[in-house]
Length: 72
Image (cartoon, rainbow, N blue to C red; front, side, top):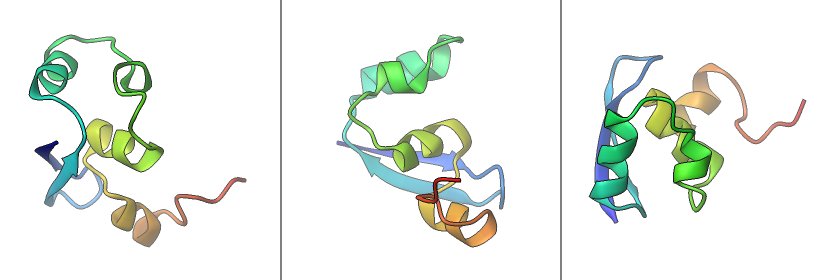
């Protein structure tokens, strides 16, 4: 588990989330373009993967966009 900090694309706030990934995998994702987050981190749920991509937390998503779990 590591602490990952990202800037939210919605609020510009710096958010931190503890994720069950290694620093090596995070470094690989951050430095090599074209990697799909779902392929590199299949153990993460959708909210955790979105956080890695955009810095948006599930709480921010629910507040500004709508229920993250809605299937429309």
